[in-house]
Image (cartoon, rainbow, N blue to C red; front, side, top):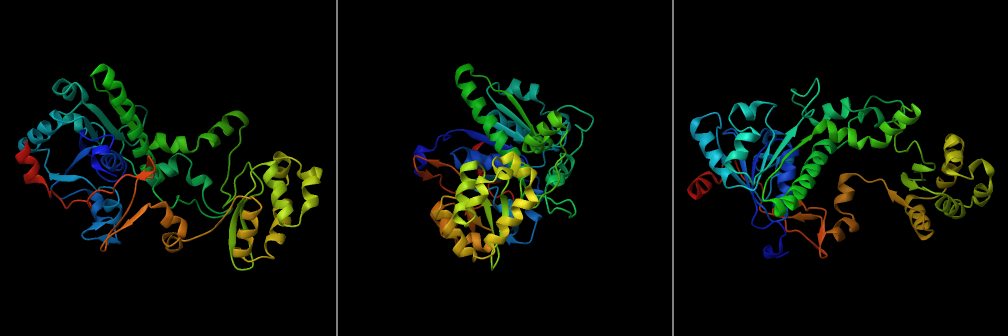
Length: 376
């Protein structure tokens, strides 16, 4: 995509954030055209050391979250570092900070002070537990929030230990919510000329991902348990065996259940009153899943996927990362951009049918310090 068509071109972002959530927001804004300056400690963002695997001297979490940015190394606890950061903020449209609660304010960068220097600035804070509450002064990481907010309690096998979701859904989700907030604040600023203070919290994101579970508890006292590949409120909906492995099947409504039964030669089932509606099927989960599993086990995965897709039944193979990387649909998605010993995953948005360009590789620590200082 041509850089002159990027929707956020001309906006300046100062990212005084490390780890994953804040930088993820910064990368979203960068991919959309904003110029992002990453302010790092002299020793660098802590996530640089999270590996292996590494790309160069940085772990893949850092490398996949900080492309397209320029890095300046500053010790903001010194007079020179604080003065330089203030100069950057005075020229910025958006500030993203993820300091421990209260630390940024103690350095003189509280919202009121910053707003006085730059009234149009959108001031963004990434917090662990939010702005209020008994734990609001604590730091936090993604798996702690998955544990505390109940995600681990509904993840994993039926009788296994609590399991973390296998990717950093809380961090990445928090970065996404912040990007949405920033875009809304930019829209408002177009009319008012004044910036906003936005905060997001890892704990809040984890609660949001559990929305229907929390509502189910408040309404009906239901406490869900981990169910492996299944979902508590839909049947049949999960992994089913084949002769050589398993595939996922999602017969999420009565019509799809009818199609599934027809494809598997189980026509009488959809006329059986015991399975006539989804609530009835849920109440007889074990019985119905056993019937379907006996039928799916007579096919190979390839045979079953083709047969069900031809019948209009939602289904998918269960793949590992190596298989996903070479899947024809992954190639067609144009999401993965590979380079010489490097790779990037694009922003999952198409703009007039095209992907946003993937920016330059993540910078080394302070790679642009002299360049940025000269600009100031």
